[in-house]
Length: 169
Image 1: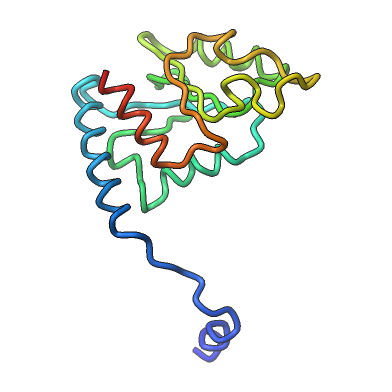
Image 2: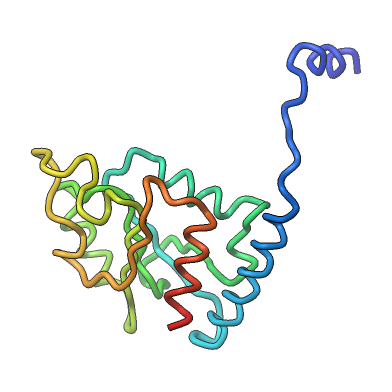
């Protein structure tokens, strides 16, 4: 008990309250997304994520989208380990040359119907890494991209909003 009090005195408050308006907004958008996913797929939307050489920022935001505040999984968005179970391929980062074959093989392993989403400015056209000796073309030059989520990195609400817009079409 003394250690807890001592740490509290030394470190101060290390947690914070989050905005209740954000919670209401996430809940509202999430329920709409859940309804759209159920209408289109009759089950959850399964996404296989492939990092083709990112700096980690988009990956961090994607992880945040699955934390207890946003929790995309409760709205029917599941990330799967195998492309054979995926409906969508989510590509993060500039397409490095050593990932081209792996990305194509992942896409080919997915069952039909399938679609590709790019997350972040680097996945669109290489972003700040564009023109680098080790960055290949944009992902859309290799695979048929149907949705791009812009940002460097896009926030969890941007991800949620983009999925809502795409599935609502």
